[in-house]
Length: 447
Image 1 (cartoon, rainbow, N blue to C red):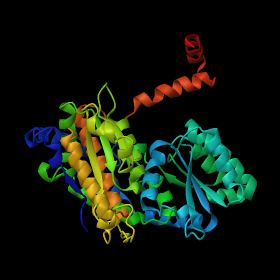
Image 2 (image 1 turned 135 degrees about the vertical axis):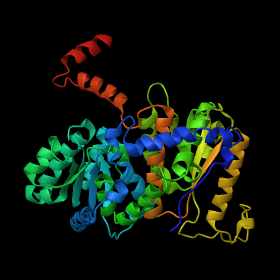
Image 3 (image 1 turned 90 degrees about the horizontal axis):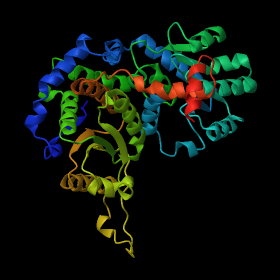
Image 4 (image 1 turned 90 degrees about the vertical axis):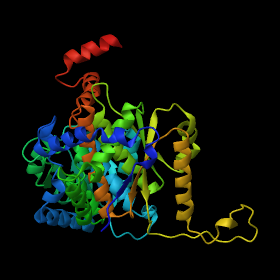
């Protein structure tokens, strides 16, 4: 099998190769800190060797539970927020038929999502959609008390039990949670739900290769073994024994930090393949939550091209020069569509007749890259040979490993997220949650 590729040549106008390689020692120290568990956040490094440690027994259990849910359900709702659902959605949306939800005959359940926001209209419409359908729930939460997923699960659990009875509901609800403690673990034990464990040492944004991601991806009908196999291949080639010049995760981490030091404060993750939209959403959480600390950090944003060239293209080309771009490119899409000849040729496109649409897209990609570089936007390019489970597994682990290295180069703990708690305290106080009386008084005095 091939490997995903990394090309930094078009980032070298803003920084030099020497400036990037000047960070070799910092990158190598970061890699050593990861593998020696000697850096900040070392308690959350369970993802580091996760791909190669996924057992055959766990894979078989995941596949068996997925088979059971597929047999019972037209739809399965993944309840979770942040890393509990974004990795799943990134893989499922990347590999699914774009119009699968309209197909009359389906092999696998529709994967739906809840608990990733607090939209009343959304929950109403979801419960209405499920009213006359056979559905199941995968509830993903270490604690079982995070507001957004806990609220959604309470509503959906009640609806499912009312529709099929408590006994059948038990067979259609799976809990992915802490191994020993928390509200969801307690409920799962009481009700007899099938359960999977979120490892204590794996944070949510690094959890796509745990049952958090593997179970719903398997329910959707995709090959989780290939996903894990792809991740293993990058795990093996990005460790401390790989020279810096050959370590794509280290080179990417060093390049983006060199660009950051040169004044490039925003990274745009761009794709020219609409199926990769949610890869960008997952990536934004991974890097934003890992690096945005101590008044530091590259701001992660994502664009879908060529679509966003007609909305964001002007700003990217001529706006403030604080951005660089990382482009994910798919070398060879599986499906083929050829441009037909049209006798009237009113649209003037006969010069493209007989060519694949992907050929047109690739020239748009190259033309955009050249225009952006000319406009002062350094470009990094990541190439996947094709879009499948194996190369997505490579991509996800590559980004995770590079994120850990990059965070250490930056000088932050890439595995905590203390700032996330600020909004929760205010929200609980405003909702008059027991235990937040003092905070409630202080906040209301400010309003």
